[in-house]
Image (tube, rainbow, N blue to C red; front, side):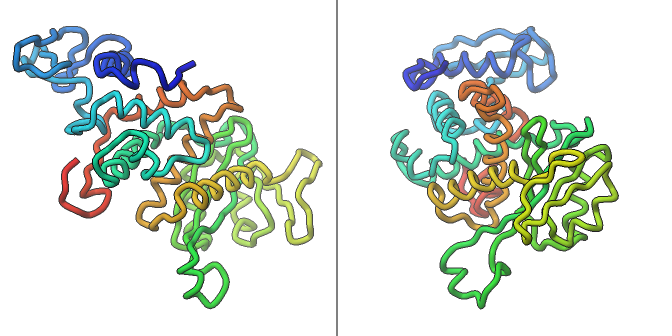
Length: 314
């Protein structure tokens, strides 16, 4: 079990060796030409640590090339520590807390760092369709806003940001999407893109789901409006699993992050989806979860311009 005293969180050489072992389990791979195991460590006086040279294409490279760490001035051991902290905190860790804990010179550095780690948590299309074994997939929506927006609103949830989430009951995986509205034309493409036709769809009584159930092998409904929360025949039908996911998400957003702009909400959803899909109840430890996030840094770049619309570099 990894502890905060582990050398990879305090020693740059140990952190680099740890990352190289995760990125290149079968041997060093040249990001320029793809050659495996045919490179040498450069050891000149002015050569930066961890620089290799491919013997095939003769080009230099490092382990962080082509990852979210590329061109970052933050030491790699602090990246490892920040990733572990964000992965092991059930309800997240604010950028202000990272700023204080890691001793950064500015809050903006910690904020951007956290967003790059969330980018690494994005599993993308790596996961198969949910419910492809005929299992249950719970689908529901939730709303999140802030007090200022609520004060301006006349009532209802129209002013709030809207999220549709799917949770596969057998595997515990979660996937979320931020949507503009909850119309059938908006929700149906999300279900089709993420669910197998063999899945057993489970929802509440919302009319928007009534006309989509026929697209799947079965559609179980519980009527919350009539205080119905579980039905036992012919299978157990409920949406309690997804309600548990929303409970963790809302406690994190209200208690840890407190406010999130709509332009960033999808990144926070990736974070909560990732931790929930790789939680302890599924036999995944904090160390395993952090290693998965670190492995997810490969092939991704997130610049400050893409994150905040500004011209500042990483």
